[in-house]
Image (cartoon, helix red, strand yellow):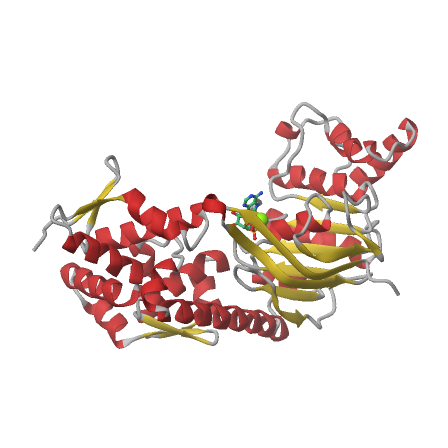
Length: 430
Ligand code: ADP
Ligand code: MG
């Protein structure tokens, strides 16, 4: 049987300042078979949306190949439809008109367009809302329109780009369950689904296979097959075991990458920092130190208890690991000796611990401090460091990295930064 989709050794990069290229995807391989829901799990910026655009034929790779039902993809693919996170509805059109829009490209007779659109609206649970305008609908209903517009074309491949992440918890869960039910009953007019998500539990709930993307340049790092019958029970041990397994895989890879980045010495300034405030760092350290964890916690447990999602927890855990206030290993996070001292310390001592951690373990912080120490004026413009960072990463990543180091340095008083003048300085050159 021909695969619905085959992605072979795909490479995609984007031009960056100074004639350089930002390599986003490299050696990426992926297959979608008929009857499968495949989840793509990766942090923001790892290239998930880029990959979906390649699959839809809206962009071309610089290397490798993609094929849809055995034929090379070299332009927009009719049989692929997409549901976006932001519902992307036209505000001046009714629900029916928004859904019909999906069919226009197919050139069907008007009567059939209407019949099919009404059927899709009915299927997706929007019966009675045909003539409503998007502004009259709740977020959940709007996303249902997004789904109806995608399935109305009877796409062989349905792609969903974080389709539930703009919805509140209950609405999202209702929509997930409805969708799975339709899929299981064979009522969705589609043969295979690719779903991008950053929510591990969502992936375990819905997917037959979950593919974990590595960080830039991204490939598929590993695959986890979810061998549970539908409908799945989030509270079962087997379900939790899958969630844990994915957590462990994801943290292991992230920690490894970070250790490698910290090890490269002077080049370590090229290590990207994700924006996490000193408050978030202290908050997680305090929660870890307190009962019931007493210094060591299972990452999924503490995420759940702190009401954090992966995308929110990982950067904080990573920052704690980077500063050596904690150790991430497998699916656990554990406070180090320094982390425990941090918890017991008064504010001034906390600042000192933080400052030392920055100088020893965050090459960029140490670098900025050194430059400021060496200059007679003890100051330097932001542009200088931004330029240096842009040799290693994209502009938005460089900006986030700089913003992060500024908030850490401010808290620890390692150096200061004036937003208006865009200048770094030592408050007290002693
Ligand atoms: P994700 O969907 O996983 O969050 P994206 O695919 O949107 O990630 O983006 C991956 C990386 O590629 C980001 O660093 C982003 O800045 C960059 N990127 C995406 N599209 C473009 C583009 N059209 N031009 C330049 N850079 C881009
Ligand atoms: Mg995206």
